[in-house]
Length: 396
Image 1: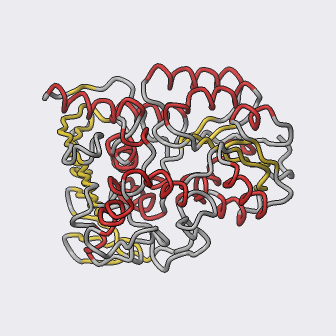
Image 2 (image 1 turned 90 degrees about the vertical axis):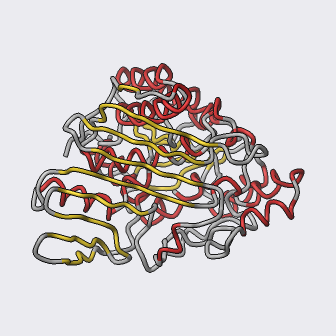
Image 3 (image 1 turned 135 degrees about the vertical axis):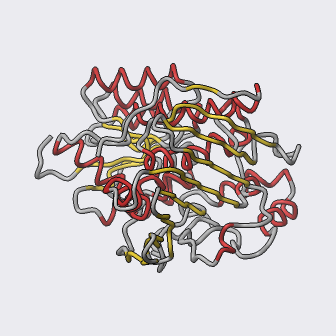
């Protein structure tokens, strides 16, 4: 494409994920907000009021066929990713899709093959794996100053299960539950830090609340081909929260108070089951409980406690960057703030589209991440170790 031309960008699905990408598009000089598609007319109207020059559509297929849009972000429910991505690719659009890429490996292959044939970019937006502190951790591991990598851990306790949910978000067969929806982030972070090549997975998932039928917690052990080990622990049941560790977690503007024990559970209980869909609607673009994505917090984004252990030292995230514990000293690396993982998604997309630099988070990376999600669920069900076959090495 013309390297002097701004990339006309469109968003399919104006829920939380789609809304979160609006501000990064606005502040990136290489992009222009060109359009959006959503089934909800009120949400579309709020978007149109904010962006009168942008086009709006009531279906993914319509925006895929539209002229004047170069790239699309697919942030529709997971079960629709395959159809919506394929429609975009068939019309020559470059694509970033929300995680997980699909609910099965066969659909991931269909998207990868279509993108290859059409010679367009296909990326998966595991946004927390793009975050600057995680990328900096990878650099410390890669440069070898602390010796060979031995262990990695990401542990996150949140209120995820009691935030307002659409039915598919609590249906594992449709890509719901924390192992698909949040494990995707954890496995992306861990695979990035570890070089990508996971050998096997042993996991136990859990459902603590019968009224929320999908997996709400998991403990996953990952072994890498080089012998490094990792754990991913997630609990979304709104009791202890990782925010209590003292971080300004940088999520900002959540509809429920991160610091108040059980606040999400209480809000959902007080609203009653018949009103959950209305609560969910309110967190969509411009809704009464939507996040203020223009408010940049004075800290780095924090996706749980991430600790990396090398042979001669440890690394963890701090509010200002990284803390490195070597045999000689404890030191902090200060990292500039204000650049989010979603900003890095757009940078990687532009590099792929304009500069022909292959993205790290391409379709095959997304497929490899999905393989870990599926293996965790299978391992828990069969209570056995699952060996992997579709992993992708980090190219950095």
